[in-house]
Image (cartoon, rainbow, N blue to C red; front, side, top):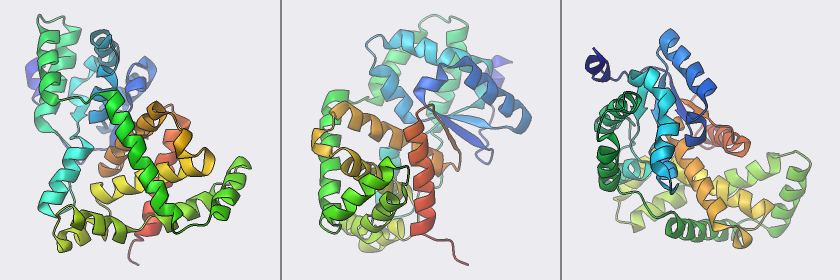
Length: 293
């Protein structure tokens, strides 16, 4: 019976919730989502970023158990997503916006994993170590350095078109609780045409680049997310003084947010800044690509 449940088909039309790694350890949060699964079929999406966050901990086998033990009550509620980078790569290859986020082999593995952990099945951690090795989790420090450099480049591009006075006035407004001027800067600084040109320079055909940026796609929404992040750093703190680890964490939050956007789901996080950025990116998406009337 347990095996049959784990093989149950994945219904991607159901409501979804992307839960970050920290809240997966919160029994109350998981139980609430399980109740929703039983009442309306809402599925829990485990974004690829979860694995990177868990394995970044030196004592990651214990972290895995702490993160996944509550999920074992409803393993069939789980969905594993493709990595955002993999989905963007697929879009660049096909020239078509991705329409599905479900990584079916990883979903089957994940459902079996949480069940096996709860039943203390022998060699579970050995199989998990092998899967993670094959999955290829990146070194956090080197990735953080690269991501800070990329953020600095995004800011430099925006600063070519936006005056220092506007950054300063947006800073003052934000300190007073008004984020409107900052969001105006993001809407002005983010240009889909620039993303399209960058894709062409990377070898993507011009018509494909246009298709991926003229309407929302994983690729262009991810770029919007990073632009929002970079400009917020620029307005509030300055990227040059930012700690690499904090910038890295913002990139991880962006991956959760992009997956939640892609599956039209809820982003469940206790990080107020990450939740606010998700809401603001959704609003900016509608502003940059308004629905035809």
